[in-house]
Length: 141
Image (cartoon, rainbow, N blue to C red; front, side, top):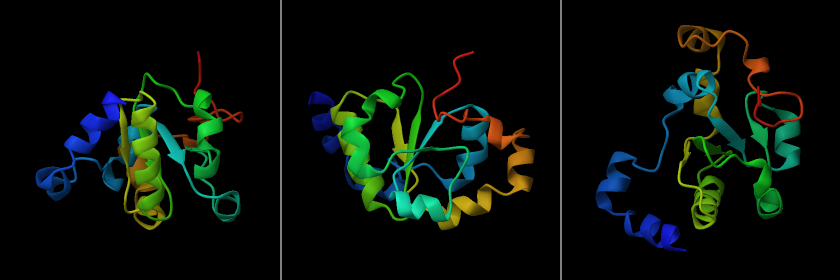
């Protein structure tokens, strides 16, 4: 819980003004290239309509039961269709001891712009479907 106390103490005017808790959508190509763990918190119905092969899908309401699927040793970037779900998940993960957590508050509309072939190719990402194996876990070899 000390992690969560520190997290809330850091939520001051400067942090909100500079976006200290956010990851910009423009960072997505680099995050994908460096194999950050992108976590989609949308409901199953939302993800069925539009899924991202570069992200692991765990609906927010399933997060407490699926923590073991989230790596603790690499950056975890949270997103949904709006900022409230990643905010809740971020506080929860920090309370559970994750210390490399951020979120993309702009959600999918802004993310989609950076997931086009041009920005991905410019960042050195050439096959986004191979970033995450079919099982959804992080590659181990």
